[in-house]
Length: 334
Ligand code: NDP
Ligand code: MG
Ligand code: MG
Image (cartoon, rainbow, N blue to C red; front, side):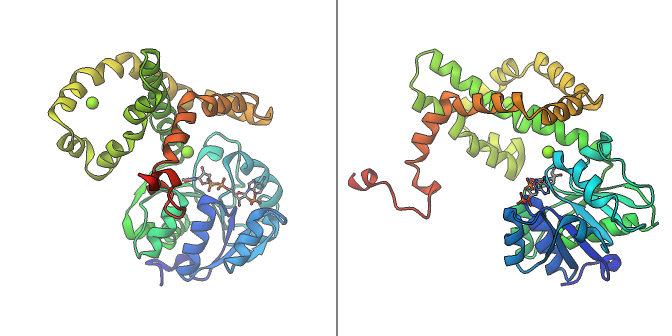
């Protein structure tokens, strides 16, 4: 299968990191007929996985030597060291350095050499979906950006890469490193991960503190969230409203804005300001360098929240969540 633009037809692409995004990008690029080498640490779990998947595998520095495009797909916090040690001394002048998230370039944790292109292609989905959609002949929409154009070909390379991973089959949207970085951080903090988990925990605590059973509370404020989000995803808020009862709709209209009110929005703006002025990036980098003391504490508190224990117990009875294991014996007795 060829890409719609042949800018990378004779290029060697080094994919550094073989995790969620790395594996999907590498496999899709290879199936698009491009020349891919995977750069990972010797002895790490990724080395064997990439080798078993049929790739040429090398240590990152070795993979970068001779590559025309280097995709940096290791976790964000290890990218500055990977850049310093493996990329900066080895990348060819005029080659392209590609990211899937703009964090390190935008916040200057990486200051790329001036003689290379610096570009971004970020699929709007997890790696597994980037791969499975590609295998079905489709693709996941991608956003793309050019930060630095040393070769005069940076935009063409970016689009060819987006095509190569399947994004061109769906849709590609132009952005810049600042917009991608700031909106990605805001979305995961205020709404998707931080906002949603805190909303659920607060709803659960409210019902428990009022004396309701944890099992019932779990179903009402957590389990059923998926049904609602699926409707959002398929047809917007309009589809959700179409499928819920009139009573649920009226309650939504009068109580939703009482919970998520102007004060919440004001605090969302504070969160955005901390992202924009670099406060979040500074704090997160310092936290990472200190060995993640607060991160570990916060994570443990989430894992110890009472909703987790009741959820684990209830999910064990939801046979459709475990399609490969036999149903628990008790459920067969009924
Ligand atoms: P992963 O956490 O899945 O990356 C893991 C890979 O990085 C493994 O191959 C691992 O190798 C390697 N790695 C880990 N630590 C090191 C190290 N110290 N030195 C060298 N290699 C290392 O990353 P993601 O795919 O989640 O993220 C990659 C990029 O994509 C990030 O910039 C992220 O922001 C972005 N992104 C991620 C999305 C997602 O859905 N996850 C969506 C869109 C963008 P080993 O096996 O040897 O440990
Ligand atoms: Mg993110
Ligand atoms: Mg509402």
